[in-house]
Length: 84
Length: 200
Image 1 (cartoon, rainbow over the protein chains, first blue to last red):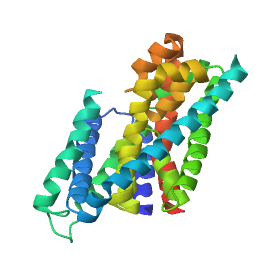
Image 2 (image 1 turned 120 degrees about the horizontal axis):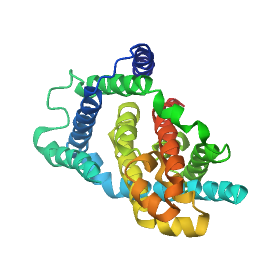
Image 3 (image 1 turned 30 degrees about the horizontal axis):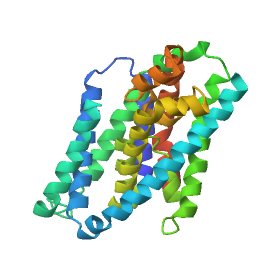
Image 4 (image 1 turned 90 degrees about the vertical axis):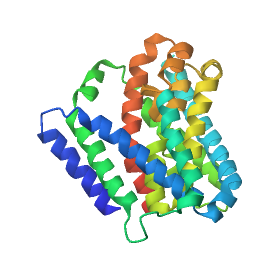
């Protein structure tokens, strides 16, 4: 984890120092995201335990998504009442 | 929307090929995922550092509106903490890490897979895709019952791109600058918050 955070902070500094825009960075990012999600898919599909657990994972995800979204819109509602 | 479908289809393709080629087709010794993640982080970091203008554009925002990303993060984490109570088989910090994706399903699920394994990574992928879908479908209801800022908060990190059209429709076009500002800041917080909760 420290390696990954180090790479991110290092490249952030590099980006600040290097004034030139590199237009291909966005495309490389997209392709890497595709590759990584494909690899995640391989790991899920190739692991019978995870395939078996998919319904449970889906219900967990539904509960987390619903409550997290509800929490954020309630917080936004509080801010809206203060602004209005 | 089209971009999201292409991205998700790569995950689906992996799921279908997984049983055929196995979870690690290149052998256990080569961690292609880790190398690709390092490259991805270098790209994300460089892109953020290279583009200071995005943040400079938002100087003229009302300071109370500028608090919206904080409300989104706080509200999301409170909601996720409640979810952790309902899901005793998951660790609190794992649930908070999943919640910290804020709809940015690609990056958050990739991170969580690397840190905590493919099972929680899949939960993160599904939960954050669902958050985007909730926002796309329910933005008008959210705006009616919780005020016009609600769809922006629900959109999370996606309020600057995929959910911006529905936010514009349900909140009004005068909220586009807030929505983009909110998306940029929440997006920026995803790698840091996810890593933080995975480390705890």
